[in-house]
Image (tube, rainbow, N blue to C red; front, side, top):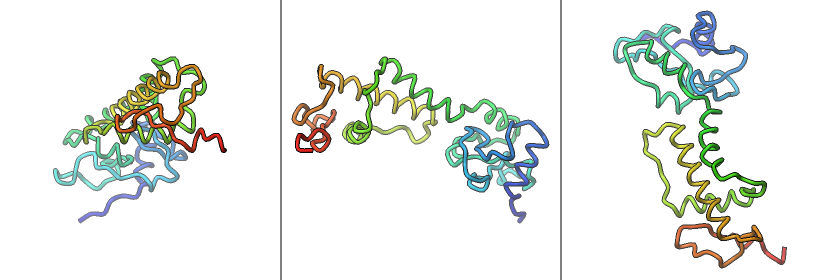
Length: 188
């Protein structure tokens, strides 16, 4: 059984070939462009799987993050995977998807504060929110964006003109915003 090529050999192959735009000095997932400290933090992904006679040559590998490796198509046609990599949205595009959903709210400063992060986590837990196991990162980001939008809309309704959530305004069993008594305590 042949061993896998090193990440350095895989990077060298693709830099020389020029098919996939990568910078050898800037380690990142070939597909989503998520930066990593070293190339070795990425997974070596067969273009044509070993199980269907894929070789262990550097040209039969790309370097992907764990999420992209799971999402990557298994194929016996190298061009399908290369096209998938070239067309794959970057992590910035995925984040923009979530922000576009939230952006329909015309957010103003203070709509989602550091205090809201804890409340939002509790809000999500009460909503029994989950995504399909095969969901892409873009779909997950969109779903989180939708939940953030719902959270902010509810916060605006409940907060009223003061913009502050107070204890007792919401029934936590209803699965909506729960005010944290430690956040707005008058005793400090």
